[in-house]
Amino acid sequence: MSERNPVLLSTLSLDSDIPLYSQLVSIVKRNISAGTLAPGDLLPSEAELCKTFDISRSTVRQAIGALESEGMVVRKQGRGTFVAEPKVRRRTENVYSFTSEISSMGMTPSSTLIEYQVISPTPDIVKMLELSGPDTRVYRFTRIRNVNGEPLILETSFYPQFIYPNLTRELLQTHSFYSLLYEVGIIPANAVDSYEAVMMGPKEAALLNCRSGSCAFSVQRRTFNESGMCYEYTQSLMRADRVKLDVFLHKDGVSFSRSVDKHLE
Image: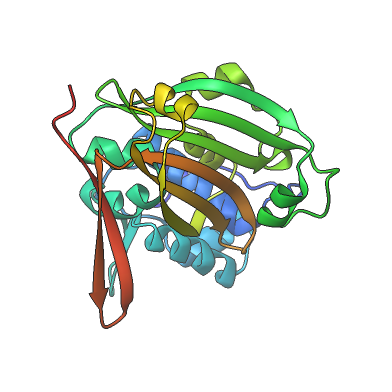
């Protein structure tokens, strides 16, 4: 089993700027996405991964820990690490991915790209993305996020160009950007959302098929990878007539979930 495990057939690049553990995470994820690793399949042992890729045990443990925190794998005491069932993985994917979140509700997500640019960031964007300065080029794109064909969210996102230098308008229209980032080892570890109740102006209301002055949630999100780099800043306007937020208070802290009205015509 271990010698034929597809994970062991890949290679790591020592010349890449992407950390070795992130490359290993990407290898496992690619095999899961391609179906060469199925739910319940056993991953190679720590010793096998260390030997095959010539990396330290701490690097392997960091990669497995990242996969486990995302719900991609589960560790079973005395047995090893296994690919998780999709229903387990969905819990963490939904936190970050609009496509996964809406699909898990039994509805159909889609996106309409209305603007795509590579820009020199304003001081506000430099601050939000914690960039070294305005010389760092940034992707700026605006999308309408649809559910069952009806517009739900108007979303403008900013990403440093260096995290995925070859992004094009065509690629963005045909792929989930999060799936492209996963392929190069850019993996979300945590995010900070800020919600505010607002009223939509005429332009925003027209794009979301609402009346001007309709209530909405204004949401700002900053997303960080495992090393603490902020690689995403998103400004969203979300229709309040279609979205419900539930806040849960528990002994370990506070969490929330977002649900969408299923009666979208």
